[in-house]
Amino acid sequence: MSGFLTKSDETVRVRFGAGLRHSIADEVARLGATHALVLSTPQQSNSALELAEKLGSAAVGVFCRATMHTPVDVTEQAVAHTQETGADCLVSIGGGSTTGLGKAIALRTGLPQIVIPTTYAGSEATPILGQTENGVKTTLTDARVLPQVILYDPELVSGLPVGMTVTSALNAMAHAAEALYAPDRTEASDALAIEGLRAFADGLPQVIQSPGDIAAREATLRGAWACGTVLGQVGMALHHKLCHTLGGTFDLPHADTHAIVLPHAVSYNARAAAAALKPVTDIFDGPGPGRALHRFAQKVNAPLALRDLGLREADLDRAATLATSRPYPNPQPVTREDIRALLQAAWAGETPAN
Image 1 (cartoon, one colour):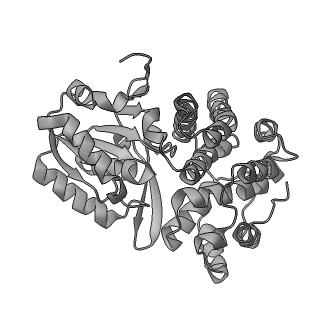
Image 2 (cartoon, one colour):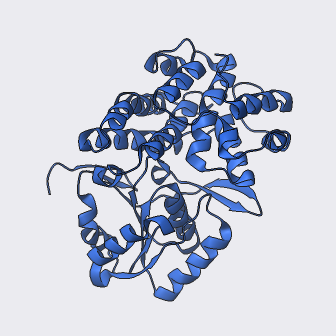
């Protein structure tokens, strides 16, 4: 195989290249593992079975029950299955749901992970895990959940439906946008965030025009890696708090929710962080960062209204209360009244103020 690029630091081996999935047996052996358990969602079970076939005798099974928002009860089933099979390595193929399950198992077992992303979620590049229990989604940061190997194979996202491509990309972009005003931001994190945003601003329209363009797909995967990596370097704020509340409590689709909330959360925080968000305004060519992102979302035909995801207007009061129940760092002071108004605008699909 040729044309692959490998990046590495002390903990993560990252590779980009078409056809990388075919080298999965070599990657498992490189970890010193001999009993790999392959993880996926039910919808991607065929891909998981294909990987298991490539692994041959090094595969001890396939667990295809990964679920959105990483419910703890599913994780407990998966851990039991992992122990029953004697697995010494996890191979996750899929988006954020499968990556989340792999992380949750690793947290409880200490097993190494190889992740093969099929979306732009970016969570594979972070030491962050979000889990849902009793209708509440919580997050933790722990080095034990960071995968040892990430294989970005653009052939695997070349068949990703355009709609899912768009929402997954905007989900990744949200990490970079919030990183720009994080209290612990650095010059390096800013540069990484800007790199990720530019990759999507340039690459996503190309992918929409030609979904099978492998070069464009690889460019957007590099954007996903940059956005995911910066998510693991700095703290997130209002946008992610709102999306975790909406997803964990009201079971809204993860990527779609991020896509809709992003322009509104950025517009809200632009009141106090306009200078920090200027790269967003410049990259997406808008009068303000929130409106620029909203215009870009319209251009790529992203979902714009939470009501279209099934959220009831009657749920907005509860969502606002939950999202403001505990304080968290945010550039613009957070009040229940303001967040209720933000959610109303996102629910109706209105254009952000700035």
